[in-house]
View (cartoon, rainbow, N blue to C red):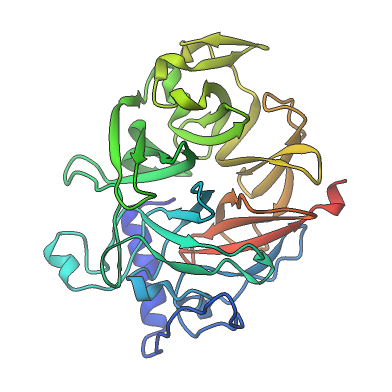
Length: 370
């Protein structure tokens, strides 16, 4: 996640570099994932020589999905979760397209919008994550889920999501400034809820965590469900903070008074100010999941390359960070998010590339970590 203006410039440069190429419709799950000439063709699929391997691009003109058909030429993040009825929802952060009407809306010529969702049923991820479609507000246009207030907010960026009792809950941060250097400023973080499987979202004012005190350490969140408990891994805004931990009964996820905080080896209720770090800095854009193959919890993060750690319990201790995608393999890679349908000896995750400003699906063979 970088400055809004820089993102638009990157998306624009990629667009004009591939001008004149014809878009095609997204490939169905049964089709061959051959690349479609387009934005990603400027860079191609990265040749990852470290522990992780590239599968293919999932956003952009040259992706297996050609998300331009939903007015998304560039996007980042790709946070995935099971919606509770056998479907994957994948939410992306700031996205860009090419739409002259956007100039009239004061959102630049490249149709920037804050966040969009694509849907998928792909179980076999070895050939990629194929999208069935997008949450749209009109045909051919991915819907902006949470709209920033013009003049008061730069963007609203999702950080994690989970399905509980037929509802979708998404944590997000209110970004007010991009000072650079892997830092950004937030006014608060909060939770939004959808009761119709992602079509419409309501912000919940009672879940706001101001960017001050102990809540400063929970501006970005990653959700992990273990039984009926949701563990919440938090960091300050940006990629330079430590990791803090809270937990709450899944049925009370919107009640901040029901949260407890991990503090020097014990759980303390209601007080985020006492939370103590459970992991090292610099760390950002976390994703945590239980992995049956390793028999451990796995954490992926931007630190500043793409890192992996493991632990036997949600509280840790976490193993030393190990690089799985180095900065020399995939320049400006960030935001690794574990796909919830990963199984067996491969861990699948999405990862964004700022230079390209699109999202890649990657595969991590786990036998090397046994």
